[in-house]
Image (spheres, rainbow, N blue to C red):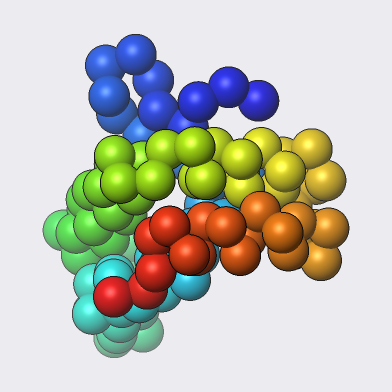
Amino acid sequence: MGSTVEAGGHPIPTSAVLMASSKHIGSKCFSENVAFLKCKKQDPNPEKCLDKGRDVTRCVLGLLKDLHQRCTKEMDAYAGCMYYNTNEFELCRKEQQEFEKACPLA
């Protein structure tokens, strides 16, 4: 697996990248996710929550870009390990520790 960011600097949100970043996403994008889930619970019409969904997407993509800028090597290694091992956290603990040391949860 190559870089987690395309040539233009935009993050590529593959399953491995999202799984590797899941703790950061859960922390940084918590309020956006909660607002989206509340909206979905209140109104089953998918069209009513598009703005909330965009907020979640914007938050996650911004976070991925930030993580890649701050700890490129560690994020690429962790996401690469997750990709190679079909997103099995247990097989990537070493890379996870290095990533979380380089980019600790805020």
